[in-house]
Length: 293
Picture 1 (cartoon, rainbow, N blue to C red):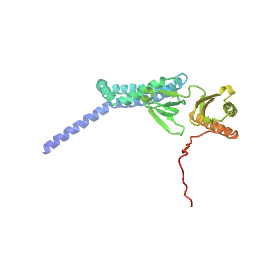
Picture 2: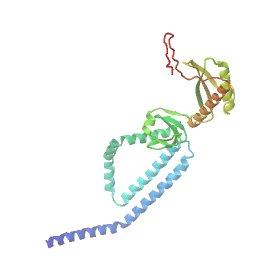
Picture 3: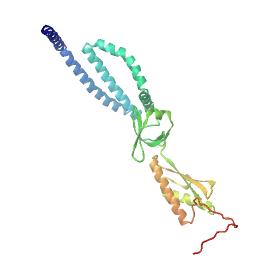
Picture 4: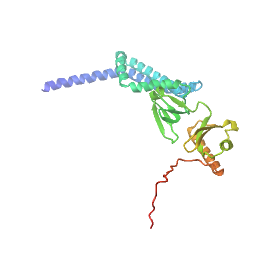
């Protein structure tokens, strides 16, 4: 038993000595490999910053600029990793890695179909000229300002200051309504007046108050006033005008201000805004008895 133990001990010592000898022999290569990898990391950061500054002078969107800068940084790191493997005489390991990359890539692709779809969609969105940071858009039932666009999702900042993260795949596959493609937004407000109202006077009154209240409306011709229909209890109309903003919040504020102006003007001129009421018509033959107390 002691003999076997001694033999095992000697083999372990020999193995450790061989490892130590290999470490001493390869120590210069190990030091050089570490230095090369550190240089690759530093160089990747420098290339990232340099490419970002150069791309800022181009017409590419900010999201696409960030993507290209990151890709260039990753390429530098991978190149440094290949150099490290060569310095450490691990060329066989490198060949094995490259040989297994195809199989691993196929497995990863099947497992990450959704993530890869979002990544590809993010690249596509980076090339879309009509979608950039600061735009106010509506997509997939959500509305807000585009504050971030990466390889996973589009981040919207809603009017209530909450953030919504929409996967890039859904944004690409569904319609996008961009309110920022023009410098102005149209405010549309509907209302109704009683059948006894003077329709010409109502139209002139609404147009006058809107033109006086909003600086964006240079003249009365910029306001569109349309009577729409004979409603159940009112004659319904619609007024449209432009404001110098593409924010949905500013549109809502303008609509609120216009609503207050119209209601105040109607009250001063005894113009009624009817609301649905129910009238009960009793036949003459029906007698209603009241209890006398």
